[in-house]
Length: 142
Image 1 (cartoon, rainbow, N blue to C red):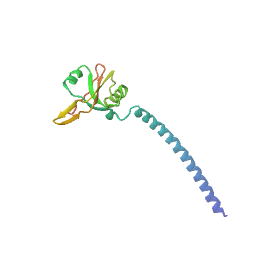
Image 2: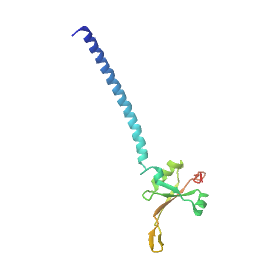
Image 3: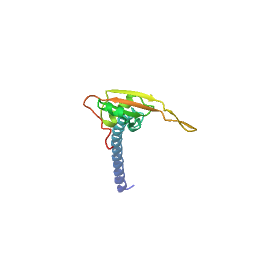
Image 4: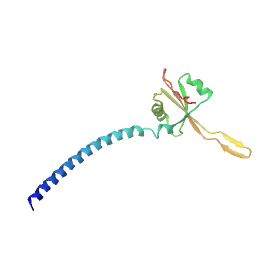
């Protein structure tokens, strides 16, 4: 083994040590990113699904538009959600915290078209009450 071989061995040992320190630094940064991602996942996992799957659409009727003057908004919601999930979804979508949520389940009406019998689909309706001074613009773009 010559003198040049000893010098190249030392250089490779140093490069291996440098690689080890960079790997440790990258592991630390990945742990920090994992913690950030886990907190985001926890916040999102508090809802059963994305907010647009919980709140299906606003219910536009004469009675619902009269209630909007008093700060009450009516939405059709997913049948499997509860009040707290609806409240979180409204906060996520519209950025307003509701003061009260009322939920009603409706069974679809039985219908007939001549000899054919059928049934309309069941649905769930939620009435969200906002604090005074807050409002939601659900008629935007209509």
